[in-house]
Structure formats: structure tokens, C-alpha cells
Amino acid sequence: MVNMRDVAHRAGVSIATVSFVLNGTKPVTAATRARVEKSMADLGYQRNVVARALASRRTHIIAMAYPALDHKFGFSAAEFFTSAADAARKQDYHLVLWPVGNDGSELTELVGQGLVDGVVLMEVQLDDPRVAVLQGTGTPFALIGRTSELEGLSHVDIDFDRTVEDAIGYLHGLGHRRLALISGNLNDPLFSTYGPYVRSEAAYRRVAPEYGLETVVLECSGSTLAGQEAMARLVRDHPDTTAVLIVNEFAALGAVAGLNRLGLRVPDDISVLPLLMAPEMAALTNPALTIMRTPGPELGHLGTEALIRQLDGADPLPPQLVPAKLYPGATTGPPR
Image (cartoon, rainbow, N blue to C red; front, side, top):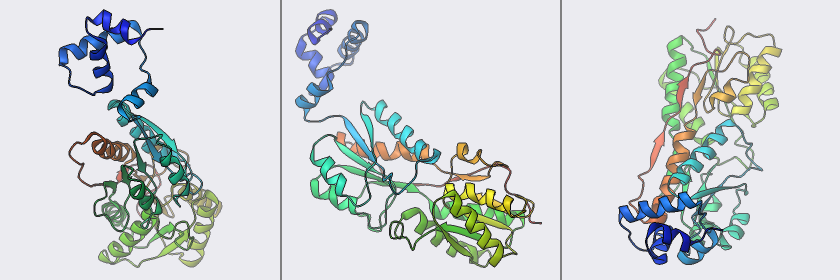
């Protein structure tokens, strides 16, 4: 097995210099670093991650905490993960996915073991107990999402106000005057303070009246069956609706199926526009969904960068809000 001595001999430097390159403990000139790294590549040297962690007291591993028991994995979530992992790799970090709950209990145990240098929190609640856990343990962290109190918290998030404004403006421009929102189920204790549900509904209730539109909100849990049931309620109670906005991507899939089963044509009879979805998910329906494309690739990268800047002692990343963008499909059109 190739060791540091072999690398040092080939590069014409001391073993200590190789160690400085590997651990970043002392500055090394660019030319020397390049020579050492070339020697490592030529010899097939593999870094000893455990030894590096012991020497630097850092693992160069960061965790993305995702409450998988409460939130299903979809293509949108996968975009966050893959983007975050790519951003970490480019800065010489490894990213692991922690499917821990939202109550913070599992997180307390995991961060206490010193397995990771920091944590990126996803699926953030307005009052998220995980924040207090990480603050209490002194663990560096960044949020992809927002709590209600943000002072001192490094965060990036979807711009829900802009996303909803653009979605309503688009449908209004097509001629729709009877819009409804299929929101998340805020009566469910697990989601009563879930940021995307709360912020999307608040934006809809603010923007719709600005266009002279009546606000119609139906709550719906995040499943395809719930989406089907929501469409049945909407058609029964609000039969003059010509377009519907949907927050949850799984409910949106069920909505199209539910309308088809009711004998309604999409978009001839009713237009469907999910507010947060990835293109791969949109292609699963017939017809393919017009969507507001979730900025998962951007936010996964930004959230990881925000954490790594803390770990490396760099200037903090300013808070950033990124809106979802209209992605054309075949489920929106002028009203009948």
C-alpha cells in the first residue's frame, strides 16, 4: 500500500510537507502543492480520513438532516441532496444524509458523537426544535428554509412570495378569474408550522385579492390519494373554479388523476399548476404538468456553501431567497 513516505520521495519533499498538504495545517506554495498532488495521483495514494480527522480534529464530513419519516422522498428532495453533495465534494468535504426526525432527539445523539463537522437542516419548521439542539451543542449549521426568528441564523430558502405572485400572475394572464389553492394540512401537528405550507398559503391570501380574486383554500395532506380527494371536494364545493395551485408535489400527481376520474379534461376544463416540483416529477402525469420549478439545485449548493464558510472561517454567505420559475408543460391554458 502506498504511504506518505512514498509520496514524499516521488515529489522530492519531506513527509511533513505532504502532511501539510493533506491536512491544511500549514501553508504550502502552489507549486509544491501541485507536485505533491501529482505524486499522489500517479501513485494512487488514498487519504486516510480517520488519521486526518485525528490530526485536525475535523472529519470534513457534513450532514444533511432530512426528516424522512414525515416528508416523502421525491425528485425535488433528490435535487437538494445531489446538489449539496456536489458542492461539498468540490470543497473537499463529504456529505451524508441523516434521515432524522423533526423533534431534535435523534439529532442530539448524533451530533454528540462528533461524527460530523456541521449540519444542513432541511424541511424547516417556523419553530424548529433542531435549531435549539444545534445551538446548545455548539454545532455549526445552516438552514435550507426559515424559522420565524432568524437573527444570527445562516439560511437560504425558496422565495414563496415571488413564486406565488408569478404563478397567480401567469394564470391571471391566461384569463383565469376563479383560482383555488390546494394547501398543506396545517391542522396536522407535524405540519402546523411547516414553512413551505405556511408561507405559500400566506402569500396566496395576500396576492389573490390584489388581482381581485376570491381566496379559496382547501387543505390537503401530502399524498396522491389526498390530491384526488381534494379535487373531488373542489369540484363539488367550487364548481366554477378554472385553475388550481397545489403546494405538495405528490398531491399534485393525485390531482390530475382525480380530475381525469371525474371526467374533467386538463387543462380544457381546469388548469393545474403545482407551486413546487421538479421536472422529472412533472413528467409522471398525463398530460405532463406545467410547474413552478423548485430551485433545489441552487438551494442545495447555497445551503452547503453557507455551512462550509462557517467551518472554514470565511465571510458568511448572506441570506438568499430564490423563487421557483415557471416550467412549461401541458396542464395550463385559457379557461373554458
